[in-house]
Image (tube, rainbow, N blue to C red; front, side, top):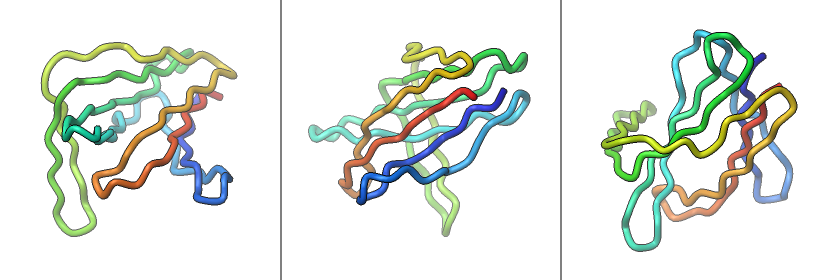
Length: 108
């Protein structure tokens, strides 16, 4: 079962960003806190397809070249959420440019 990732638009609708299937490379995103602190999230669909995990690292580095952006987590990870079939988790984030939005993870 894949992990579907969506973003809430400024109109309150959900737009699909993509999906991760068992064996796919993990995804990542950052949440920029008002005090300048950055949390890095890594998400993946487990190899057996029965669950997906959302993990958080309290620090990270962003690297951007053209249209490519790489997020490198630093430090240990905490498990934020384990999703099983039918589960959904909404993660509010602030982008590097200060826009606030919500990322939705669904294990379908």
